[in-house]
Image (cartoon, rainbow, N blue to C red):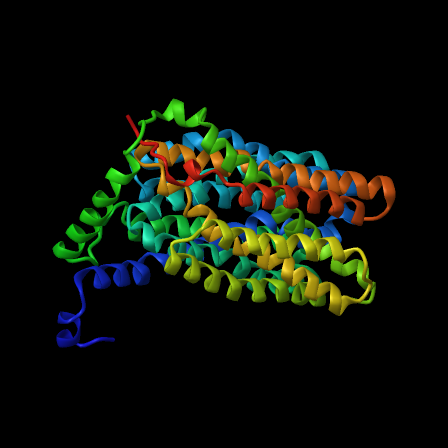
Length: 438
């Protein structure tokens, strides 16, 4: 820790950003680990759940994807509510409701109940991730946003680094009270968000003005910095919430993001089964450990890419190049039966699918503000995440029809390549024009 005399020589802006990073980002990071683990742990559970409930490949693809239908329906209203009533109350509500539903998912008796549980989980969780993107714009100037988003989104690979081995261990060893281990996996991993929901209500400030850890000077500096960025966003036409929903510029980003979410959630839900198929001798614990490796690699890549993107204030190519690496690696995945080479290729896929996120999510706040940015974040995330319905569902359908997962992965690779092309031809006005609340 710096001494008082040392702190006196540090510029006020540096002190403010440092304090926010230390006090806000670690907590949001932990919440995202919990969030993403509950969203995708059904991929590990499927290693025994599918047999217990007689779930076919096509049904599994549908039950993983149906989460995003509920997610889509409530995303935009949820983000507008967060902007109106504050992050502390609304994020706490999201956490508690999704934790309750995630826990109850462990008590389903058939695939139809599981469909409903997954749909309701998406409904409950809607708004959390775009809500945090919006929340970070209340605290960080533009030049700091990609790094802040990346530190939050590190929860994505870390949830796999921590959760995959843990989930595999539970699946192999937890059979308490004669209840199936996959049920315990869903129940035990549904409890933390309930606990963190109550903690959030008491510790998370909604805005810098409410932050007890900032001095009056630091609060004033943050507000002044954010206000100084508004004129650039307001140079052109101002848009209402309704106009934002119909903006071609925003829908370009929606389409781009959708193709990458086809890949993101296909890999999240199907990677355990891909690895298991390479060797029938692998235990569930071993599968969990192997799933962890690509996530470990991608976590490092996320930090490096976001840091470079903020330093250069360049977003497009920092997002596009990792995606290209992922497309090529996924295209090669069907050519190998070597577990080692497959894990290397999966690592490059994860680098792309995680690495693009921070520079991509720094783009909307460069031309949106106020209720428009709340709407834009939610629209891009909600509609884009329907790719999470399309990808796993198509892969499940094609696997059931052909007996192989690789035809479905070719479809996923094509979708990701189209998103790469959209990134390359990203219109200038999408990055520089002004949409704001009217």
